[in-house]
Image 1 (tube, rainbow, N blue to C red):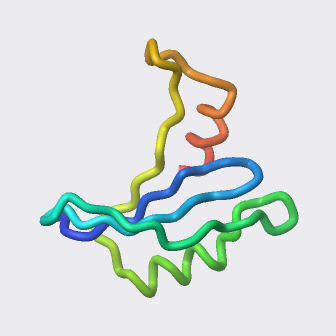
Image 2 (image 1 turned 60 degrees about the vertical axis):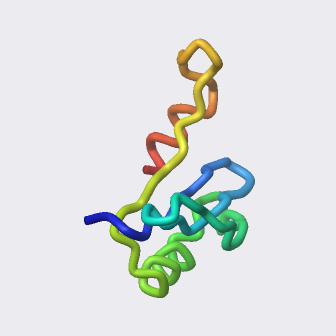
Image 3 (image 1 turned 90 degrees about the vertical axis):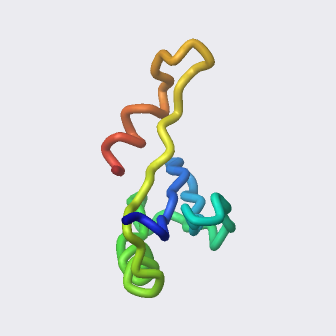
Length: 80
């Protein structure tokens, strides 16, 4: 059963991180990560996973209102 999830809102300049609970259907912002040498801060992401021990990781998929891909879709998929 999935109870706790970590969610990532990926961007090339920053990544928003939130923790969510499926039981209460709520989410709380944790922090915003800045890139390290133009790459995601994988060390901090690993620390967050170790700290929160989520049952699942979720990455937001940026799409247009008509569900077509945006310029940000492919980078978000690579991140995930």
